[in-house]
Image (tube, one colour):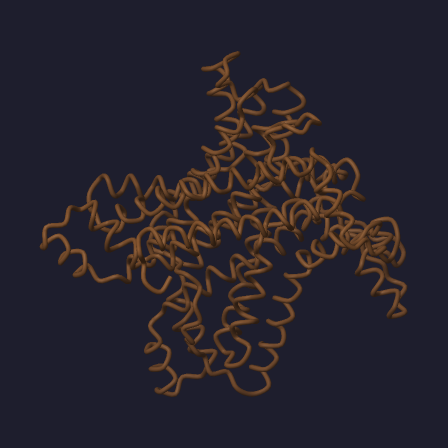
Length: 527
């Protein structure tokens, strides 16, 4: 950190790739979990606007906007045209604040992972037995004593599980390091070093240095999985639904807590709102205020084959992968929840592992293995990367289906399935005829979430696609295209935003269409 006159420039410190990555992940986790618990507790104390503040705002804020939301953070803290510095100028302050390097990566990750952490912890809290909190209140327990002695201990498994997830997501993140890569500190992270060395320095040849970085990331992730396995397994996060678990926090302090929580959750929404604004404007990175562009950016996407091809590719990949995720994810959930023994344990581990194995490691492993096996043939990832993209998307995003479906199956009485089997139905028919329709709400939500996650996947997309050729028939999804555009010229963020926004809308439309088709095929009533 360096302070010059009345200007504050924050870049962090450089301790080398390994320490940088570990300290960054620890710092991000240490910031995200307390913020999330604070807003979860505040949400549970709201009786008005609870759905909007506690659920809808963080849900929108948690939608991934790869690279664009990171550049929105850069825009907020930019030295010359940053929104924060413009606000300070309007207030008559002479202070200027600029954030860059590893500090910028940390701020981006906190803003990016905080809404997701809030939603996961809130969905777990909503499933806690309300009678335990009511009993504490009826026995004269003060609200903060109830929170500290009852609620937080009951949420400990979820807190540990979410903290583990945030740590791993921070460790493997590529978006932040690439977005802030103009500063040396941001480039000195394990994920960036492994990625950049693989695709550029060594021409897709895996050097001992890259192998070391990948093995370190995998070793840390596996260690976290083994240490916190019981918490990861026991913390099944259901579909978000306001069941009105209520904490009575009256008075001034309760009001202050709720106001601060509203402010924090609204701030977390800022990068995604900026991305939407970028898509209708132009020239914002080079002047204080943007120029209104209307639908010009969207029109340029439609009339440029290079752009709309990436959008079409992404929607096709999303439709195929999310359908596979639905089938395989439900089967994995059912086996892990309804069967016992080694097979259930293996399925449970395999369904959790994709959450903790870094995407950089997965992408490099897939490329090297299949490139060596099929070198020069039509199945070589160099010539046919989309097959391996579908495989990695399906495997890596399956947990977004498995965890909510497991939570749903956990609440369904076994007696329904036992009655079906006693009437002569096979286990297969019982699984799809009883369990699937009864957990369809969670399946539909998992399908929507996994569709968004597939459409915005970064790590394996960048590695398996590499540098895409400028043609109308390239196989790339949107994330490598967006990365190439805004890293080359940040002014292209407006056009990149116009690529992302309709892609996300298309992914949600596909998800709704698939869900409606499934409900009609299976004749699920009321769906």
